[in-house]
Amino acid sequence: MTARALPPIADYAVIGDCHTAALVSRRGAIDWCCLPRFDSASAFGRLLHPEAGTCVVEPDDDAATGEPPAREYLDGTLVLATTLQVAGGQARLYDCFAVAEHGGRGDERRRVLRVVEGERGAVPVRMLVQPRFDYGEVAPWIRHHGADLYSAVGGDDGLLCWSDAGLAPDDDHGLRGEAVVRAGRRVRLVLEFRRPETIDGDALEAPTAAWADEQLDAAVDWWRGWSRRSDFDGPDAAGVRRSALVLKALTYAPTGAMVAAATTSLPETADGRRTWDYRYSWIRDAVMSTRSLVHLGFEAEADAFRRFIERSAAGSADELQVFYGVGGERRLPEAELGRLGGAAGAGPIRVGNAAAGQLQLDAYGHLLEQSRRWFERGHAPDDDYWRFLVELVDCAARRWSEPDRGIWEWRGEPRHFVHSKALCWAALEHGIELAQQCMRRAPEQRWRKARRAVRDAIERDGFDERRTTFVQAFGHRELDAALLRLPAIGLLEYDDPRMLGTVDAVREALEVDGLLRRYSLDDGLPGREGAFLACTFWLAECLGRQGRVEDARRAFDRAIATANDLGLFAEEFSPQDGAMLGNFPQALTHLSHIEAAVALARTAGGKVAA
Image (cartoon, rainbow, N blue to C red; front, side):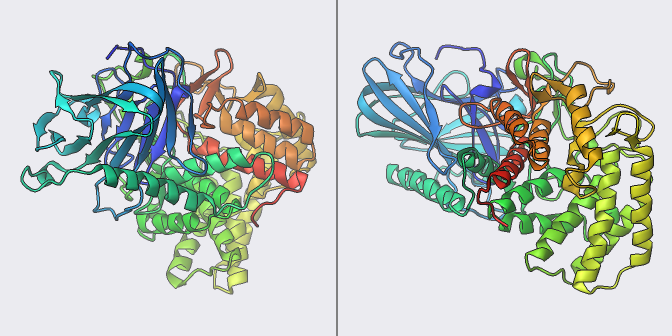
């Protein structure tokens, strides 16, 4: 196969099975896939290094037309369909994970399905399966198990590889195959993750063509069955449903955790260094994601995450972390993989994230908000959960006056971030309301005193009277797009004069080509990051709820214009060269897209779940 430069991030699609995910390029290459979980080491990692593994299904180079293939997701699904065009024919490549057999955490068999179906003429197709386990460190041992079944084993990882087109080992620790796909016929490739000790040459059973076709149909039915539960309509409904599917795909089904993104170390600047591992479950992102899904009619995900956090914190607010592994793991030390060069040479590649040990006070408010919403939907906390909630509110009452690292996981000295203080206020507010409505005993007098103290501090030290705007942190004049969340938190109304002034000030200070940056100050890290897409959606939501509908629509449309052709968003975007930046696809961007669309629908009288 002809070597090609890696495509830009916008050229990738995501497929998943609510256990892990893979990125598939427009030309049919799986260049990122961690098995068996989101936060496992990669088996296909060419996204981060050219020699870290790939799986390619593409037309024969000599027969290909050279035109970029067209692609789409089948309606209501995360099943990708890519058109393979050659001079003598056309076929479609369907990519997905098998999802019909969701198992618990002990079931690690993740199955990737790649099915080529002829539509007209004849299409010569080449296949390459080239795993590189442990982020490209381990080239596998390839073994033949009879018929068309092979295994690739290295360390603690293994893949079973099967194709009805036939596969054969190559000289580079991989497997290759060729076929001519004619109209009405199919060729299939199945990859199944297995632990090496379960791969026994005498006991393995190869897939069949009928089984692969059944699994493809089942995946289509499963995703459509889930997405049909949404009752959102209006002009933005198609994009909103796509964002909802992405959020569902980023959920780890066995525990209810939700990862912030499917990738690690995609750079936020062209020169690297700002590279982080987002394959973990942040409290903030997951609570906001589940709230967005509830707006669309999906409630089960919110309850699953609520229970995940209680378990992961061991029922103790004092043990609460900023984020956890998808199984509830707490120790996630940050390390750099020095051998890998990074996406487009921009490193370093990181696994783990040092932010796990930070103090981020907003977590208390997010969890109390989620519990309040859950109660309003008819679910009262039991005794055990109430004790956990009381501890959370007590922590907010006790610690609100401390400096923290804030929503952006500040790596400099802690500050008194206004956004963090506002969410401590929200924890106290929701705690008091829950105690009253649930008729539960709680130290309400102490909570009320702390609630008043937090608000007074924000209004005294977090507001610039001269500029009529809230500021990023006490004692600092810089602005921060996170201030746009203050009405959503409940601290004040969207049309409060102080909020009107804040929106205008944030736009003036942080807007670049219609998109917002997070903040304007030097954060001590190298390079200048791009526009942070969630912030522009927050702006659209604010403007819409303030009645500035035309401005809201312009901000919203500018933000959605940064999506790729499949409606997928990265974390950031470079207005200068139109490139996606940061990890992909990004939950925070997709959930903020949903929230902004809901706000615009309400201003236009659209239908939204209560």
